[in-house]
Amino acid sequence: MAKINGNEIRPGYVIEHDGGLWVAVRTNTVKPGKGGAYNQVELKNLINGTKLNERFRSAETVEQIRLDLKDFSFLYAQEDALVFMDTQSYEQLELAKDFVGDRAAFLQDGMMVTVQLYEERPIGISLPDYVTLTITEADPVVKGQTAASSYKPAVLENGIRVLVPPFIGAGERIIVDTNEITYVRRAD
Image 1 (tube, rainbow, N blue to C red):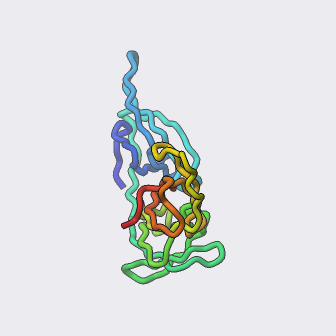
Image 2 (image 1 turned 60 degrees about the horizontal axis):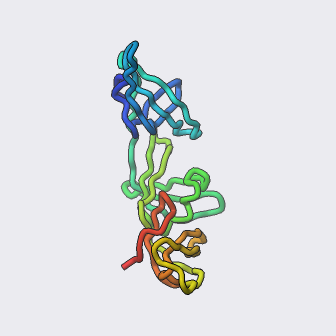
Image 3 (image 1 turned 45 degrees about the vertical axis):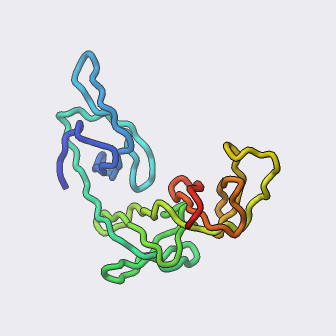
């Protein structure tokens, strides 16, 4: 672990603060007319998700935490748990579906994910940014609709609903952004 000054905190840095692990979401350097400059940092707790706004002066030091990133392959889901396999050691890791959240619906057999570990304990998971899925249901095109701004609802094979352009129909494969849960483009 490395000590850094409060004015060196940048978005994405993981720090130890008040006995917890926090990730910097936003930072803003403030130079008031009176007094010393400080770094206004929006922090998010990695364990429970609470947010906090904190001021760090350049004279203050905080511990920057280095997270271990490991590649895992998704194996299967069982009841309320998701099972992953370490691609290096072949050890299995079970995570609660709540840990992954809504994006668990995008997990596919054999999909590679990156798990963030702190002292061998999982604290975060990153799915691929884009996945290819098939549309199972799509509303028919309404005559006279302009293609410029009209989107229609569609249901993907995993049950997630997204808005797609009117020219996309049921049975087509599309690429979906897993972070925003939005249509990106047709799959090749």
